[in-house]
Image (cartoon, rainbow, N blue to C red; front, side, top):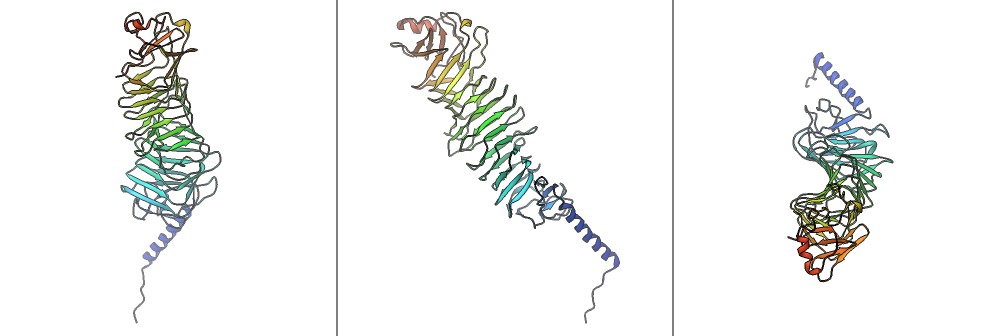
Length: 436
């Protein structure tokens, strides 16, 4: 008969302590509203890895450094939900598959070199919740659901990307960049990634954060921004044109940088762009189309290598500070302008003397004009002068597309027009760039 194994009392005591520790850990991890860190192994430190997120697998540590024994996810209740953190372990690309419909207060990919993808089922975020990325690329393919009156903070830190790839049901307002040093990109990978959202608040710092609509058309959604908070609206798709069919309000002293970066692709803004002193800049080497009404009062800059297109339905208002050696808003840069819409000039007529001219578009811009291009000054609409190539006039105003001069004065005879416009009789301080 084989003798029965016996163990010394010290080993029995150690086993008992381990069992007690496991029970204590289980008790602490099952206290809701605690931070839980994805940890796929009980080895020391956070262990990055693939896995299934459910209520039974022991993949969650209560310690950010992985010093606690991993336990199961804590479901919690409304107003008492846990926070989920991913990252902090070995570098790599990992996928976490949801095995249940998760209810989470807050989800964050922490600092480190791990890139995670959440896939399957759905995730309901708490009323104070949101998504944040501190490093790398974080992809959410699972359906996101936001409770009533939720302002979800889709925040991405400098140089990082948050990809929304689910068919989501969100609340009316989404804040992008609700914090400091948040200069990353929120990229859409689903036409309904912002489902339910009517207002996107670009609440960034002065360096700016990016919303990449990635070749999709977004209807019924407006963008607002705080004063002095620069932001970007782009499309990185290499296969589809994109359209923002909503209004954009640029905060005072804020610059919106926009454009499509894919070769031969465009980003169209068909809603109204407004802003007391808001500025618009095209993204370098991009194509931007304005087909709606633009009443923002800041400068427009056409960056090198980029194309700015004013469609036939587009409208830009220039508020000229005439007579004070200054202009409220101008169009500058070294890119290309395709102008087929309407320029309207607004200024105080009393400030403009006979023979004076007004600057609103820099000479380094290469501009071409479409058949629908219209130029209005106050209540006058300028029309093409018969027998004078490139000359438009009306209401006591003269504009020559060939030389790029817009001025106030008596319309000369067609035979002498070009000579006069090229001479000192009319000041050339105000220039629309001629074709190159």
